[in-house]
Image (cartoon, rainbow, N blue to C red; front, side, top):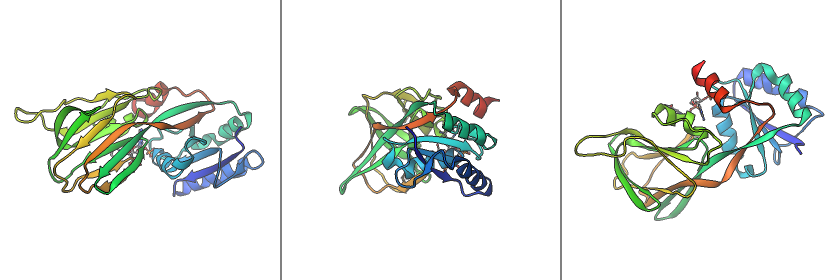
Length: 262
Ligand code: NAP
């Protein structure tokens, strides 16, 4: 049963105002709890939702997420800024379903040990300075030696973000898969990689190794870090997932239409 909540709010006037109104309207319905909320309400856009997911990832197995849209796209978000009364009424009614969204486990292994990251949209290895060479293994079997700007591995929820700009497929978020897409791969008679996205499942681990590390960085959703020489990077579907609460029907198809077509 949902008894408490907290809000993560985009730093703009519109989002702050909506947050204040919502807080007032939820008074007496849910308790505001900063440390152990049952529900996290993000007010902003997908960027704010991603921030909230990272900020509270330590609670991911016990907390539900929902978004109110005041941003520019709002693919993740269920309610518009002018639908606060509907959200409050739906919370009061308490009828909902939970949609689990896949997360990627990313392990960067170097001589000092293993650094662990969780990606909700995608992880990217990119090099804006030099042609990056990456050796790609699937379950330790060599697939290709990629040359180009980089590689992106996305979750189904992240398939509509950077992956989509790379020409990757949009994937239904109920599927437990991850998608490897190329960032400007070189395809000619000297160098060739797959050239298309590949969709992999729970049983697969993608391993990346490389020989030259100048200027290469790793992106995890909205964060990026310079990579020091590493032995390998392993990417697989995590045993954790994000639990998105859905109070009213909003199909994946209608989300796609709303955000990309109509
Ligand atoms: P950001 O401003 O937080 O996000 C960039 C845009 O991507 C915003 O319009 C955001 O929507 C949208 N977005 C984020 N997650 C999405 C998703 N799952 N499905 C559809 N759209 C989504 O930028 P950032 O801080 O640099 O990076 C956050 C994410 O943005 C990254 O994980 C990456 O996937 C995406 N991104 C995409 C490109 C590209 O397509 N070329 C470039 C950079 C980053 P809102 O406006 O609602 O926040």
